[in-house]
Length: 142
Image (spheres, rainbow, N blue to C red):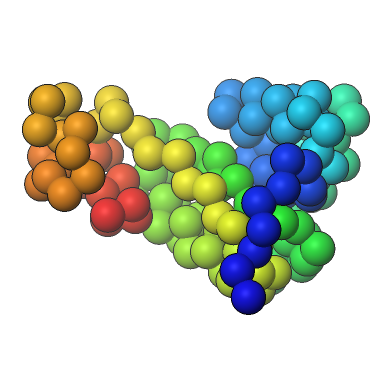
């Protein structure tokens, strides 16, 4: 049976201490959602007030944190110098967490790594990457 969309629920924000994750956690909290914010060990102080901090580093810990969640937001963003080494494993951890909990996975894309053209506004266009980071991001989101 398909899930029925709700206006509120429980969301796990992966990377809740970062720019996007912090802002998203605040926005969901302010909209009435129950928010869990996953951060690295000893980084709970980076999670917004009113968000339940969850410290984790492994895929299994992320899957455990996702239990009972309706939505998972992948706001993981590895340091640019570690992107090639970490981006795919973090994306796979987010996918495993969503699959393990039956939650909807939200994965925001990045437009800065792609050449912007009118044609790319269409969903079936070929996406042209212009940076190494764009190529790495493409291997995750396409």
